[in-house]
Length: 373
Ligand code: MG
Image (cartoon, rainbow, N blue to C red):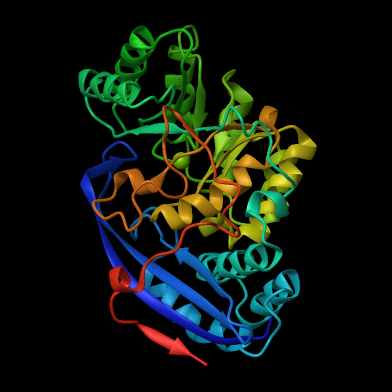
């Protein structure tokens, strides 16, 4: 399965409506996505997508992926696409760090592996867990007034969502307490919620808000502060479970977080961690230490979502909470109904589709950005 060519496309993906997080500090209106197609001598084609959530969410941006591909794509040309772990090490030698620049190539290698095996990726990642019930998906509730946020949760419920991620966080302690109290008062007993702070609080504010709502808040608090150390301080002074997200970039970060008891769970995202290969390693570590996870991607179309959902489906049910679908926020949809879709609050993947199971049509992608051979 010799790699003979890698073709790259860039697409700007407008959001259906502006999206606010981190207490309104960060606003997003469109995503810059990069698609890669790896071609092999025997005619197999693998697809991957790299799509940061704008420029301000993580130390990652669309132009950085395409610059990174100038270094990484030549490393893969001529190599055996089946040597996924070896090729990941080769990419790490050629370009240390920059995990997000590697994720699309790694996804395309896995897509090829699945197609060659004639198997969906979830089988290669360990096998489906709870395929009949499906993988629960969660809504994503933009920051707003308490009334606006409750209305968004009610609208999400009408789409089948029973797990919600509500964006809170800011300097106004009373406003955050009011948001959480209103949401808890309105939320049915059988639904689940995470309050995603997106690192907006300093530790003192996190402790104040979380203690103020400790009698009513039933859910997780996600990435309350900027750094792992700050989150560890919060975890030591509060009782609610903490989920870590933006402060985790490497396997070592997860090990450090676990050693420091900085949380009880995390988001694992291929486009943050450097691909499906590294995300699966982290997934297996989290299973071993009993952490709970949301397995999803940072952003992108149904291609990125479906790749991540294969990993979610193969994660033990007691360790997976829910997954988020980035494509639900986009105007464009190149394959309506295909791949990972919200079907009444869950995703079911088609076991008859090998690899990731969804491909962007080239007439939708337009002219390539660059090609390597
Ligand atoms: Mg988050």
